[in-house]
Image (cartoon, rainbow, N blue to C red; front, side, top):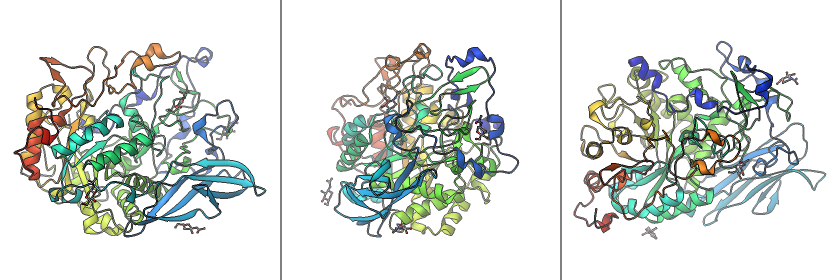
Length: 637
Ligand SMILES: *[C@@H]1O[C@H](CO)[C@@H](O)[C@H](O)[C@H]1NC(C)=O
Ligand SMILES: *[C@@H]1O[C@H](CO)[C@@H](O)[C@H](O)[C@H]1NC(C)=O
Ligand SMILES: *[C@@H]1O[C@H](CO)[C@@H](O)[C@H](O)[C@H]1NC(C)=O
Ligand SMILES: *[C@@H]1O[C@H](CO)[C@@H](O)[C@H](O)[C@H]1NC(C)=O
């Protein structure tokens, strides 16, 4: 059993190998019945950790403009890639932008940078409050005025452009409070719900990964159109996602802030998409052949896995490339399966369930991740969850946070907080109790100190550990202050039918598995009345139920309704999820159970439960003599 728990203690259990292969009828299939792909040569040799340096050739794989495979989101990534770095002054009232670029060495030219239409040859420009967002373009030109490539970035915004979040001193300026995780909610619904959540007394709302990820209406996978775990397969750090466009995201953040609510985001920075889930038209494994996928922002991306022929556009074998970031083949660890959950080397360097593992030892990758988080803070996000943190070494994470602090004027913003997802199964000694190089307790703190972070910055970086509620603290004692742990009853990963990553037994309850509202409510109240630790941040999951009749596990946000499927593979869409609107101002909590019936494919709205709200308010020291209207609920609740 212990072994089983260890094996299952992956973050995204659903993203198992089998889900990478979506069977697609392919004419190649008639020609051979067993594929020969390049995977035998893709793995690590011995103690090798990174892809070989000559794999640089496997870069710039995007089809050029004019090619039949070119699409609008591909820009001129065949030639020119880049992004905007932001570095703030210590008072956060001015910011210098610096454009990083990668140019295909086969093309010569000079770079010209345009900030709001004003062109210059320096990649750097500074801006000060109250300056609003900036539009940025980069050109590669020859002969003075002939543009051979153009790169258009998402607009860059600044921390000073957002409403101040006005919360009472009980919230310790963002360092104490409850955060609602709205799993499967679109931004437009989060925006409508914010006022209620703020009135109830929660500190914030957390949205699921906002970065561009796989979204594809042509290729149902395992019977589902757009399974939820594709949110955890990033394609770039551009911010068009399943939950809405970047414009909708920014509008939602500003509305929530103006209602007195902070917004947190899930940061997926350990890995990019699954190997074999990419833009190439030709993949195979065994006797299964499949084509390309699409993404929520339309950017191209490439992986090294499961390809059976060289790619037309590079003439080379396919390699890891996410040009809209940009990441290339050398920004990844070589492919190594996770064959042990007790070995820090393998946890760090291994590819979690075959997801392309970023080389977080590289200075560029660390900087790029810190710059992505800086971008999130610049559009008004207050803090982040770090997904799969246990698969990034404690030292690597410490330096990423230090780089983030450098970007933010030398220290993390006062109201910033981060919580690292560290699932602790049988590996508590390695991960938490024994000081060693792969320890997210005391050793991680030491790395952060060594990197130059102050005690007050370190305090803002918390550990979400799976030992709550049953075995908290995992070691039997607190290796670091209990204030540094974030507590939560059920989380979105616990809902998977096969997941036993958190062993709650009779000390907790996963709502959509156990379907026991009374028990779940009790344990969510307990989250707030327990006094055996001095938790400062507590999380409440508000999710949706799966559909029994067809086994669908995707959210009812409309993206997994088979009616939206297009193309020849749609007969494989068997687990349809009809759209339901998440925001409903007229209901109380636990809409999952109505008129004595368990509701299928319905939002749970746990955060609207009055008893949970009252318990949370007691924990926060907020008044509990309040009317329903004062806490945002309808009278009948
Ligand atoms: C632009 O800024 C970067 C980062 O601050 C710096 O390293 C670089 O030298 C600057 N480049 C120019 C041309 O000013
Ligand atoms: C927050 O409080 C400040 C200072 O009292 C005020 O200027 C600002 O308008 C308030 N913001 C919101 C969104 O209410
Ligand atoms: C791919 O996704 C983009 C962005 O969501 C969309 O505009 C485009 O139509 C999609 N392409 C295909 C072939 O589905
Ligand atoms: C395929 O690409 C590899 C390098 O990535 C190269 O060595 C090989 O010659 C290529 N094969 C063909 C048929 O072009």
